[in-house]
Image (cartoon, rainbow, N blue to C red; front, side):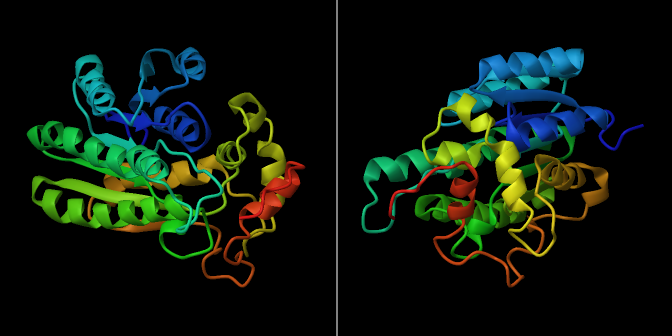
Length: 281
């Protein structure tokens, strides 16, 4: 019996990076999974890999109706919803408080904060009716300390951390646990996409990013999607039945070690690994 045997999960941003790693681990541990993402080609490959254990749905998390559809699919296909992992997200480079536009703000907040909020909203009645559940969101160490991400991305992740606390307090009496994960430097395509590379090109940069990431924090290994997936597995499982309202930091001690990057420098070694010159901020 796996740690998630009999459980049903919805994972957004499921087609690559942390999301794909979490789908693979959850299925391995016995869960049925609705994989939600806009990348339909990669979604098809998830279904090929896992068969009847997974349903894929095209889901643009900036659209509330798409989020609700993913949750509805979990219920119609598998009969329940035990875990929601609000994982979809992206970073972008270049903006700061002096140059940010309303369009930039809306795009980032809708993709991260608004999407997680509506995920919580639509998962709650399903979980409350069945007696409880676990809601997880991907935040970031960028939402905890300065210097670990772009301006708007960092603001959004800080909002997710506080929203996690608020939701945990409200939903705890329904036996719904709400937590978030704060990754550090994890080798995924998100960094390459943040500086404007196309998805297929970004996917090819992960190995180089992983090599650089070995030296980015005190623990001398690259942070990988499976490291975050393991944290999500714990929060989704009954082993965390008394854990709610907390950000779980998974960063190889980056935020406490002397080797942590200074403000504005996190993306420089990443860009160097990809042979790209960053524009001045």
